[in-house]
Amino acid sequence: MARKIKKQNRKNKGQASTVQEREAAAYKKKLLIATDNFLPRWDGISRFLSEIIPRLKKKYEITVIAPDFGPSYFDNDKSIRLIKIPITRFRIGDFNPAKLDYRTIKREVKKTDIVFSQTIGSIGFLTIIAAKRCRKIVLSYIHSIEWELVTRAAGLILLRKYVYYLTRFLVKKIYNKSNLLIVPSENIAEMLTWQKIRSKKKVIHLGVDTKKFVPMGNKRAAKEKLGLDPDFFIIGHHGRLGREKDLTTLLRAFILVKKTHPKTLLIIVGEGVESIKKKLASVQGVLLPGKSDKVVTYLQAMDVYCLTSLTETTSLTTLEAMSCGIPVIATKVGFVKDYIKPGINGLFFKERNSYDLAKQILFLRKQEVLKRKISLEARKTIEKEFSWDKTAKEIEETIEGVI
Image 1 (cartoon, rainbow, N blue to C red):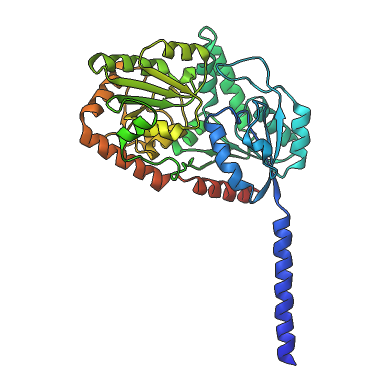
Image 2: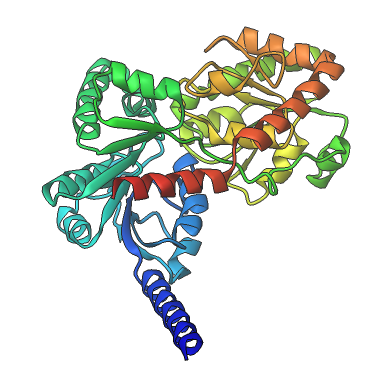
């Protein structure tokens, strides 16, 4: 009799446990993601969200507030709510901000458990303001140094100084309203603290899909796959054609290299400011595929990848190039100066110095053994330190830690 009672108690406990697990699974905490950058406009933030949202939606009930740049595959994803705010005609570089719609944003903030902001444009700014008024917890991921980005992207030379100080003032005010800032590196955290941004900070690195961005053993075959002459040396870049990317320096370096090595091509994959695109297209030997679904194929065909940016935090495209085993020559910006070890997994050149960049390109072109070594070490760096699964897990742990 006693055995039957014990057996029945264990069964009841098991059933109760199962019911609790089902109830926990049925209730997901509500996560509101606010962003001023979203698909189909491809940039680092859009790429980040395209990797993180599918991983976080297993744990949270996700609503995304984003600008309406047009249709994307998230429109058909019934497992998340996507609220699109119409964009304005006003243009900053290659970017159209979303209209100010505080009513819609506040309505969604009231419904959520936690706000996860990606930017502080019109959507991100208003979402953080609404969250503080509604006493919601706010996490902000720092994808860029906003006062540097806006100043360089706008191209307003006469007003640059005023835009810089005004943007920095507003950024500091809004970041100090966040409960926690997630930053991609320690040096970004230190820089924000130095700027008197007092909110707590946590370092979480971005990731790379190392199964997608893979090296191709046969470089000649990779070039032939794109219909290119395999005997040509290819200098490459992938990303937005923005003023802050300083692609003029890359173009000038290419022209210098081509003077002594005519069989050289420059491939820049991406869209952006029309005036920059026209300037690049005017030079013979420059290929502009635009926005392409064959990014990996183009990266695999490159002999060297150049990052000429004047401001970055992590530079996801550089990580993806390294994952493909492409030797990188970069400026010492943001977290880039930490994960690239000169002469081991990449090289640096002096900012805005096309002669130095050309010198580094020619150096790598001659040093085939070193180029191969850098290629292998670049891939190892990404495999060891950068994973989207790890990024998502750390973000999830961070969210759970502040709720």
